[in-house]
Length: 239
Image 1 (cartoon, rainbow, N blue to C red):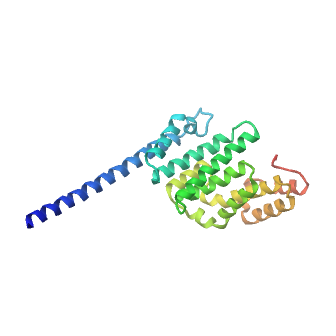
Image 2 (tube, rainbow, N blue to C red; image 1 turned 60 degrees about the horizontal axis):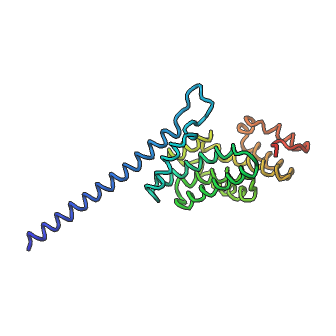
Image 3 (cartoon, rainbow, N blue to C red; image 1 turned 120 degrees about the horizontal axis):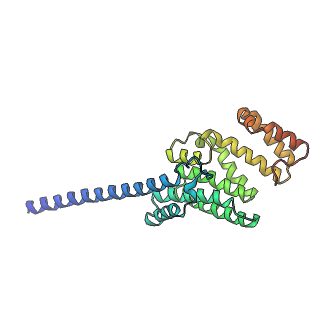
């Protein structure tokens, strides 16, 4: 009897080791697939390239990311792949011809980013997706929805500034931002939104507040000149 019990215990232990090894192998495969796809997606362009992100325009690379979403549903790798697919669509959708078509494209992208947020609400992917969703709503000129999303980001800027995950930092670099740029960028976008809605007084107040809080950033954007245009009754943003 004791021999049988020992055999059963051994079998159980071996089975547990096999399952753990299989799980580790599956995790490594997911990570490997995602790493390879992102390497192609965000590859540096050759010097003579007119495209800043040539990988974003390659359908075969996008298909690899879609494959990860399908093959590994609900995994961290699938969420990351969907985040980058939405990021690519955010850029390519800006080139859509016609205001209505561009608006539809941006709203579709905003929905994808929202799905990422709901899939992993407290992750670095969610922070990136909030940034992407706000940008998409801005592109769609859905000002009230944009303000709500941007307002949430501005309320929690310390978290966006402090996030150090390499995936998040790579996402920001793709948008030519750092964690420290998130707050002034969205304050700037709030100014544009107010101006486009012909709320000149609000736009001026927001611009002067931004200039006061981020003088160096504002100088690079020549915000002083923008404030002068707003005060003279002109619309500096072409909307």
